[in-house]
Image 1 (cartoon, helix red, strand yellow):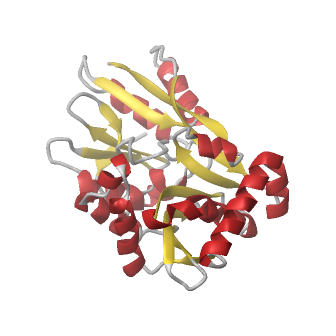
Image 2 (cartoon, rainbow, N blue to C red; image 1 turned 120 degrees about the vertical axis):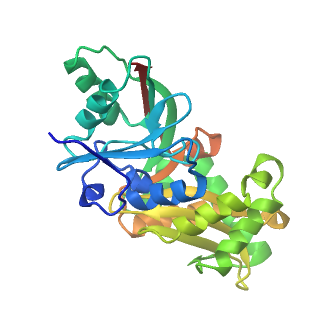
Length: 305
């Protein structure tokens, strides 16, 4: 196995199968290039280790070797290809003694693969759960979905959709315009209270502008009966799933529950497109459970060489 470290975003190995299923764009060149161009710094370099049948993007932070992609913005990590996990382990073990490594946000199958290759090299590491993603297994119809969430939640969802329609007209979900609706999405964020209101810095806005250019990225806008925008969601689609990355709504319309109305329509849309999963991504917020999502544990492998 010949290793090569490169920052070439165009090598074909970026398309190799990930070591965990349904991890969306977060392990791919498009997402990580957008992240790096927005947040990368020369003092914490990126290194992409690759051979013919594996690739792993690594980030040399001030305190450890990590997967490329800040875990606050990157919901899943996993090596690519049949050699990806071995590449990662061999790279770590080639570093000088005392080098720390922290590999986070991995579904169980990716973490177990890395731990196994460490074990082959005589290094005992135990994956530790450190977070969860929340995802909803989609049935074949929206009616079946509504039945699955139970009488109370089904009633609440229908009540909120009905109240929205009574106050603002029938809700309409449209795919957003790449410029105007993205700026609207930013505006909704900045009007919010608390941490959400300060999240959308200009640097993060530039990051979202770059993300919208990658394959599978989409912006959906919830509009009222007259066509006025009320909420927006930023997500990704692939053959497996819809991944809900971020959302925001007009705080002036909060009493019409635009967030829940939009989510119900996004779930219905994903079912209509025959997706397997609706992935709410990281975080165990209560509303995700209420909408039927289940925990997907995420693991971390860490140690000192």
